[in-house]
Length: 251
Image 1: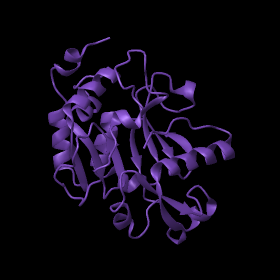
Image 2 (image 1 turned 180 degrees about the vertical axis):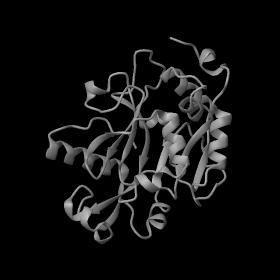
Image 3 (image 1 turned 135 degrees about the vertical axis):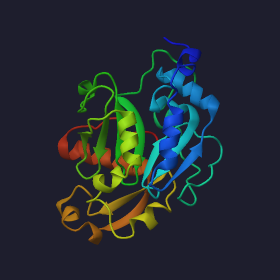
């Protein structure tokens, strides 16, 4: 086990590169200020260094609300939102990486995230997870340390075949435009931009249905608490595929 100094006092800190990527991205976003104490606690529990983009995010950033509120990427937020970088009214209730993943209140060297680390949610109830060392043992695709996505339109995990840094860089380079091109509707920015970080959007017919795939703009939409939306997805996945997708995050 490495102590905190070994995790923070490293050569080639990732934050300058990550900070530049955030500042120069053409995607609308709000970057929330971080809580240094919470960030150090997160690094210690995860045993990652500030050389990684994940470590840099946890240590220096309160999280990112990306692409008109469509995607929430978790860090270690302080008590108030920072200055806007394109999206008015960033959600002040963005939870921390530690809260989303149910970290123990005090450092526990034997604790690890169940199945993998939840690093982001989108407004549709999609979940981005960083795989743990044995993803197949928890029924998830991809390799150790790769990001996988629980898709609300299939209720299954999908391998993205990239690590956390490459995933985040892809998002900052307009990766969401292609990734969500069949799941957005006219006026989606106005709707997603008004949501709190604790809220998501559900459809009827449901996103995974043939009816929704045929004509998504015609489907009705309503706002739900994200916790309720994730619970619905988990219940439907278990009922329809007889496969429990596992932990989807605390929100």
